Length: 347
Image (cartoon, rainbow, N blue to C red; front, side, top):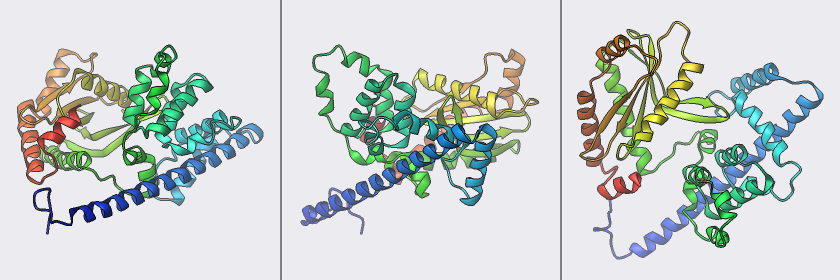
């Protein structure tokens, strides 16, 4: 029998206490795995640091090492050559700092990378490490604080210590993609389920739209600098000879969504596109109730004739908008999202 808040029996309190036990256990499990993952990255970083310093290991050997690891553990993520070099940098950044090195084991690898790349001093690293540990920041929350120059602003604020007293839920901060990939465990919560439901159906719809579309990957990872980004869906259009990236947003359309997608397209054109292929194109899909938006992102270097050719072979906005509305309504019918959750996601 499926219960909701209207049909729960009188022993709801007992049920909620059991739920609390389960949530605590899940959080403890994620925390334990995260600490082991960070410890492993630390050891690998230490090993690589010594090999580079004393055995002249360079780019080619690290790439060979990466391939060897991935051949031994089929499907394992997080062991790209770029991430290997990050492990070395991670170890060298904190190895001689007894004050900060224990803190790095308390936060996710993604948050460690954000702090390591953004902070310019040990003081700034300590600030964001403590902030993340105290508040259980998710990647998005930490990124927002760093982008807002919280460290610099707090240095001139008399109330700077108060920001250590707010707390957010612990489990979301521990659902780091590296932990989940290492465990080969999918992430389960309503926004993720909604995205997965819509993306899965969109993938099938695009493939049915025309024979010229070939599926390349879901959550396709591209790297810019030392940071990884995931593109929701990536296709290849044989008629246009170009990559087609699709990003889904749960909520209202914002102009910065297009900027983010153009950023991804530059990475694709630089690192993935072959020389004989045309510039990549992107679609941004925003699935807000009664306000679905579809926008294309095209390279500014394209000629008007090429843009017209692209539009001929890509799905029309109206067609995609109707399909997006249909998929969202289907998700709502299955209870994956409601109006309140939609507003929360948007905020």
